[in-house]
Length: 193
Image 1 (tube, rainbow, N blue to C red):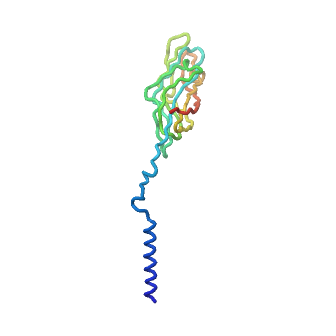
Image 2: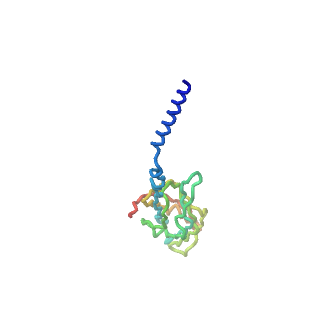
Image 3: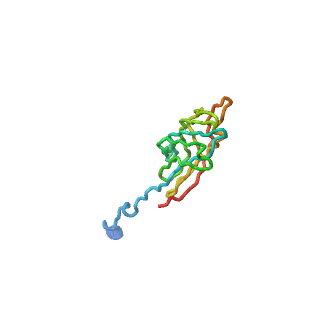
Protein backbone atom coordinates (compact mmCIF):
# COMPACT_ATOMS: atom_id res chain seq x y z
CA UNK A 1 0.00 0.00 0.00
CA UNK A 2 2.84 2.33 0.87
CA UNK A 3 4.36 1.65 -2.49
CA UNK A 4 1.14 2.53 -4.32
CA UNK A 5 0.90 5.85 -2.40
CA UNK A 6 4.47 6.74 -3.38
CA UNK A 7 3.75 5.95 -7.02
CA UNK A 8 0.68 8.22 -6.99
CA UNK A 9 2.69 11.11 -5.46
CA UNK A 10 5.51 10.60 -7.98
CA UNK A 11 3.02 10.50 -10.86
CA UNK A 12 1.35 13.72 -9.69
CA UNK A 13 4.73 15.46 -9.39
CA UNK A 14 5.68 14.41 -12.93
CA UNK A 15 2.31 15.59 -14.30
CA UNK A 16 2.70 18.93 -12.52
CA UNK A 17 6.19 19.45 -14.02
CA UNK A 18 4.89 18.58 -17.52
CA UNK A 19 2.01 21.05 -17.10
CA UNK A 20 4.37 23.84 -15.95
CA UNK A 21 6.77 23.18 -18.83
CA UNK A 22 3.91 23.28 -21.36
CA UNK A 23 2.70 26.69 -20.09
CA UNK A 24 6.13 28.36 -19.88
CA UNK A 25 7.04 30.55 -22.87
CA UNK A 26 9.76 29.37 -25.19
CA UNK A 27 12.90 31.54 -25.46
CA UNK A 28 11.56 32.95 -28.78
CA UNK A 29 8.38 34.14 -27.01
CA UNK A 30 10.20 36.06 -24.26
CA UNK A 31 10.61 39.71 -25.24
CA UNK A 32 12.85 41.98 -23.19
CA UNK A 33 10.93 44.81 -21.48
CA UNK A 34 12.94 47.45 -23.36
CA UNK A 35 11.54 46.17 -26.68
CA UNK A 36 7.96 45.90 -25.42
CA UNK A 37 7.67 49.47 -24.23
CA UNK A 38 10.08 52.22 -25.22
CA UNK A 39 11.07 54.42 -22.30
CA UNK A 40 9.19 57.69 -22.77
CA UNK A 41 11.35 60.81 -22.98
CA UNK A 42 10.72 63.37 -20.25
CA UNK A 43 8.34 66.01 -21.46
CA UNK A 44 9.93 69.39 -22.01
CA UNK A 45 8.55 72.88 -21.76
CA UNK A 46 9.87 76.44 -21.98
CA UNK A 47 10.24 79.06 -19.26
CA UNK A 48 10.34 82.63 -20.53
CA UNK A 49 11.08 85.64 -18.30
CA UNK A 50 9.58 89.03 -19.15
CA UNK A 51 9.49 92.38 -17.38
CA UNK A 52 6.95 95.21 -17.37
CA UNK A 53 5.97 98.48 -15.61
CA UNK A 54 7.17 102.09 -15.44
CA UNK A 55 9.34 103.94 -12.92
CA UNK A 56 8.00 106.85 -10.85
CA UNK A 57 7.44 110.34 -12.24
CA UNK A 58 10.41 112.75 -12.59
CA UNK A 59 12.60 109.97 -14.04
CA UNK A 60 13.63 109.76 -17.69
CA UNK A 61 15.41 106.42 -17.42
CA UNK A 62 15.88 103.74 -14.80
CA UNK A 63 18.09 101.00 -16.20
CA UNK A 64 18.17 97.84 -14.10
CA UNK A 65 21.11 95.43 -14.56
CA UNK A 66 20.53 91.79 -13.60
CA UNK A 67 22.60 88.64 -13.52
CA UNK A 68 22.16 84.98 -12.55
CA UNK A 69 18.44 84.64 -13.26
CA UNK A 70 17.53 81.18 -11.99
CA UNK A 71 14.47 79.19 -11.04
CA UNK A 72 14.19 76.46 -8.41
CA UNK A 73 12.86 73.09 -9.59
CA UNK A 74 11.41 70.51 -7.21
CA UNK A 75 13.60 67.39 -7.51
CA UNK A 76 13.65 65.00 -4.56
CA UNK A 77 14.19 66.61 -1.17
CA UNK A 78 16.82 69.17 -2.20
CA UNK A 79 15.64 70.46 -5.57
CA UNK A 80 17.89 72.11 -8.13
CA UNK A 81 18.49 75.59 -9.52
CA UNK A 82 18.13 76.00 -13.28
CA UNK A 83 19.75 78.99 -15.00
CA UNK A 84 17.31 80.82 -17.26
CA UNK A 85 19.64 83.57 -18.46
CA UNK A 86 23.45 83.41 -18.63
CA UNK A 87 24.14 86.77 -20.27
CA UNK A 88 23.50 89.63 -17.81
CA UNK A 89 20.41 91.40 -19.15
CA UNK A 90 19.38 94.97 -18.52
CA UNK A 91 16.15 96.84 -19.10
CA UNK A 92 14.90 100.38 -18.75
CA UNK A 93 11.79 100.57 -16.57
CA UNK A 94 10.58 103.39 -18.86
CA UNK A 95 10.84 101.24 -21.98
CA UNK A 96 8.54 98.59 -20.54
CA UNK A 97 5.65 100.95 -19.86
CA UNK A 98 2.55 98.86 -20.65
CA UNK A 99 4.76 96.57 -22.76
CA UNK A 100 6.55 93.36 -21.90
CA UNK A 101 10.23 92.95 -22.70
CA UNK A 102 11.59 89.41 -22.99
CA UNK A 103 14.72 88.97 -20.90
CA UNK A 104 15.39 85.35 -21.85
CA UNK A 105 14.08 81.80 -22.03
CA UNK A 106 15.22 78.24 -21.39
CA UNK A 107 13.90 74.81 -22.38
CA UNK A 108 13.63 72.49 -19.39
CA UNK A 109 12.01 69.26 -18.27
CA UNK A 110 8.40 69.60 -17.22
CA UNK A 111 7.83 69.73 -13.48
CA UNK A 112 7.08 71.85 -10.45
CA UNK A 113 9.01 75.00 -9.60
CA UNK A 114 8.94 77.06 -6.40
CA UNK A 115 10.68 80.39 -6.98
CA UNK A 116 12.82 82.70 -9.10
CA UNK A 117 15.94 84.49 -7.95
CA UNK A 118 18.31 86.96 -9.56
CA UNK A 119 21.04 89.41 -8.67
CA UNK A 120 20.43 93.13 -9.19
CA UNK A 121 23.96 94.40 -9.85
CA UNK A 122 23.21 98.05 -10.61
CA UNK A 123 20.39 100.52 -11.21
CA UNK A 124 21.25 103.71 -13.11
CA UNK A 125 18.63 106.46 -12.79
CA UNK A 126 18.43 109.56 -14.98
CA UNK A 127 16.18 112.19 -13.40
CA UNK A 128 14.20 114.53 -15.69
CA UNK A 129 16.47 117.39 -14.59
CA UNK A 130 19.86 115.92 -13.84
CA UNK A 131 22.67 113.55 -14.67
CA UNK A 132 22.56 109.75 -14.39
CA UNK A 133 23.21 108.43 -10.88
CA UNK A 134 23.53 104.95 -9.43
CA UNK A 135 20.72 104.05 -7.05
CA UNK A 136 21.46 102.45 -3.71
CA UNK A 137 20.51 98.77 -3.67
CA UNK A 138 19.93 97.59 -0.07
CA UNK A 139 19.72 93.93 -1.14
CA UNK A 140 21.32 92.73 -4.34
CA UNK A 141 19.27 89.53 -4.46
CA UNK A 142 15.72 89.63 -5.74
CA UNK A 143 13.77 86.51 -4.80
CA UNK A 144 10.18 85.84 -5.84
CA UNK A 145 8.62 82.85 -4.09
CA UNK A 146 5.58 81.59 -5.98
CA UNK A 147 5.05 78.01 -7.15
CA UNK A 148 4.34 77.29 -10.81
CA UNK A 149 4.34 74.26 -13.11
CA UNK A 150 5.98 73.73 -16.48
CA UNK A 151 4.09 71.40 -18.81
CA UNK A 152 5.40 69.54 -21.85
CA UNK A 153 4.92 71.41 -25.13
CA UNK A 154 3.86 74.60 -23.32
CA UNK A 155 5.67 77.90 -22.85
CA UNK A 156 5.32 79.18 -19.28
CA UNK A 157 5.63 82.97 -19.38
CA UNK A 158 6.77 84.56 -16.12
CA UNK A 159 6.35 88.32 -16.16
CA UNK A 160 8.04 90.38 -13.45
CA UNK A 161 5.57 93.21 -12.96
CA UNK A 162 7.53 95.94 -11.16
CA UNK A 163 5.66 98.55 -9.15
CA UNK A 164 7.86 101.42 -10.30
CA UNK A 165 6.62 104.03 -7.84
CA UNK A 166 7.32 101.71 -4.89
CA UNK A 167 10.48 100.08 -6.26
CA UNK A 168 12.41 103.29 -6.96
CA UNK A 169 12.25 105.87 -4.20
CA UNK A 170 13.80 109.34 -4.33
CA UNK A 171 15.23 110.59 -1.03
CA UNK A 172 15.08 114.21 0.17
CA UNK A 173 18.69 114.60 -0.95
CA UNK A 174 17.87 113.75 -4.57
CA UNK A 175 19.31 110.22 -4.34
CA UNK A 176 17.51 107.04 -5.30
CA UNK A 177 16.98 103.76 -3.49
CA UNK A 178 15.97 100.66 -5.44
CA UNK A 179 13.90 98.24 -3.35
CA UNK A 180 12.04 96.13 -5.92
CA UNK A 181 8.35 95.53 -5.36
CA UNK A 182 7.50 92.86 -7.91
CA UNK A 183 4.43 90.80 -8.68
CA UNK A 184 4.89 87.58 -10.66
CA UNK A 185 2.35 87.06 -13.43
CA UNK A 186 2.14 83.55 -14.92
CA UNK A 187 0.57 82.60 -18.22
CA UNK A 188 0.77 79.59 -20.54
CA UNK A 189 1.14 79.46 -24.29
CA UNK A 190 1.09 76.31 -26.45
CA UNK A 191 4.36 75.79 -28.30
CA UNK A 192 3.87 75.24 -32.02
CA UNK A 193 5.72 72.31 -33.61
